[in-house]
Amino acid sequence: MSEYIEHDRDKISVGIVEKKLFTFAEPPDEMVLESGARVGPLTLAYETCGTLNEDKSNVILILHALSGDSHVAGYYTPDDEKPGWWDNMVGPGKGIDTDKYFIVCSNIIGSCMGSTGPCTINPKTVLPYGLDFPVVTIGDMVEAQKALMVHLGVKKLLAVVGGSIGGMQVLEWCIRYPEMVVSAIPLASTTKHSALAIAFNEVARQAIMADPNWNDGEYYFGPKPDMGLAVARMIGHITYLSDESMRLKFGRRLQDKSDFSFNFDADFQVESYLRYQGKKFVERFDANSFLYITKAGDYYDLEKQHGDGSEVKAFSKMAAAFLVVSFTSDWLYPTYQSRAMVKAMKKNGLDVSFCEIEAEWGHDAFLLPNARLTAVIRGFLERVFNQSPK
Amino acid sequence: MRFDLQIIASWIEPGTRVIDLGCGEGELLKYLINHKNVTGSGIEHNESRVTLCIEKGLSVLQGDINEEVLDYPDNAFDYVILSQTLQQVYEPDTMIRSMLRIAKKGIVSFPNFSHWRCRLQLLSSGYAPVTRQLPYEWYNTPNIRVITIKDFRKFIHEVGFNILKEVAINTQSEDRYGKAINFLRNLRATYGIFLIGNGK
Image (cartoon, rainbow over the protein chains, first blue to last red):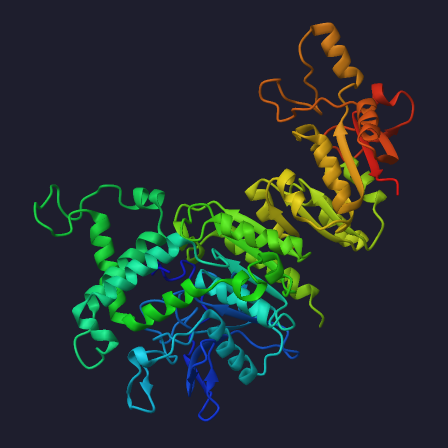
C-alpha cells in the first residue's frame, strides 16, 4: 500500500493514540509456526481507539497491508506530520465510527513496525535475527493476532476489516475462528496471488537481494540495502497504480524542466515520483521485513490450505456475513478474484454483499477517501451491529 | 412504495427467505425486512444502486442476474422476485428455470404489451408503441422482449411450471396507487404479476 495519508480535510480525528505492545510466547512456550519452526518471545504492536462497550460486542479488528502498521488513525503527538494510514475511514462519525465501535488495529509478526520480525534482537544470539527469523505465513500472523485478542479479553469480533494482504488475514480469521467473527470486510483482496502478483513481488525481492549491502540479510550494523529496497518499493508503486491513474497523475510531463536532460537524471514526473516514494520508504521500512511479508502473501492459498484445492469447500468453514469490495482499476488484485470469492460464499449460503467500486487509482483505491466505500462500510457495519445479539 | 411492489409484498409470507433479482435501490427488500421480517438479499447490476442498497443495510451484490443466479444452491430461498425485469432478459426460459431451482416460488411482474394503448398506437399510427410503462423508442429500449399477460401464461405452461396466483393491475409506472383488473385483463391491465411454482 501507498502513502497517500493526508490530514482529514474536515479536521475530524480520533485524536491522540498510542502504540501499544503485547509480548507472548515466552520460552519454553514458543509459538509453533506453520513451517514447524518455534519462535518466541513474540511482540505484537497494536493500537486501539473508541470505547469497548459493556458486553464487548463492538470490537472491530483492522488488519493492514504489506507496508502498513498498527497506526490506523489519529496522531501519536499533536505535532505529527501525518495521521494513521486509514484516518479518512476511522474516526468519530466516519465510516468506521470510533464513537460506536472499539477499534483494534494489529501489526503482523515479521514486520518492522514494533512487532517481532527479522530486525528484532534474537534473544539466543543477542543479535538481530536477520534471515534466522523463520518464514511466517498469513496463518501465523492471524494466530499471533488471536493471542492478542485473548490478551484483550475479546471473544467476539463484530467485524474484521482489511485490504490487500490485510484482506487475506481477514479471510484467514474467518476460516480459523468462525465462531468469533460476526462479519468480515475484505477489500481489494484475494484468496491467492496471481502469477502476476507473485512476479512483481519476486522482482522486488530480487532488487533487495541484489543490493551488495543486503549481505544475506546481515546489514543491521552497517550500510543498509537502501537502493534495493527503494527499487522494490518503486515496483510496488507501479502495481498499486494503474495505466489510467498514471496517465492522469503524470502523463509524460517533465519534472521541473522544459526539456530532456540528456542524462539519466529523473526527467519525467513519474520517475521523480517513484524515486521519491522509494527514498521515503527506506527511511521507515526494513528490507528483510519486505522479503518476509511479500513471501507470506505469495504463499497464501486459501483453497489449497483449507479446501483441498476447492474454494467452495474452504468457504464452507466460514460463518461470517461478508462485504466484499473490489475496484475497477485494480490490476494487482483484480475484480475477478473478488468475484470468485463471492461465488464460493454464495454456494455456501453465506450472507454476502459485493460491489465493484469505480475508481481510477488502482489497487491503492481502498486507502483513498472515497464516499461510496465509506458509505457501504458504514451501512454494512450498522446492519451487523444492529443484528448482533446484545 | 410502488403499487406493483405493494402487491408483491402482500404475497410474501412473513419470516421467509427472499431474493430480489434486479433489486434497484432496494425499496421492496427494505420493506419486506422491516414489515415481514424476511431474510432478504438482492442482485443489482448498477454500481450506484448497489452501494445505495448496502448503505441502507441490505445484503446486495453487484452482478448480472443471469450469471449470479447460477451460484445459489437449490431451494436456497422461499421466494425469488423478478420485478419488471423479465422483458430485459435474453433467455427467459433459462431464467425462469434457474429461479425455480433456487427458490420454491417465483414472483414475476412485467409491463403488459397488449394494453389497449399499445394496441391502439400500433393500429392507428403504425409506429411501435411508446407508453408510460414502456417509454422507449425501438432503438433505445432495454426491453428486448415483448410480453403480454396471455403470452406469459402460455409460456409458464410450456416451460412446465404452474401459475399459483395472478393479478393484473392498472397503474402508472412509478405510482403508489392503482387497481386490480378482473375483466378483460389482457386489454386493460398495464402490468401483470404472477406467482409461479413447480407444482410439487
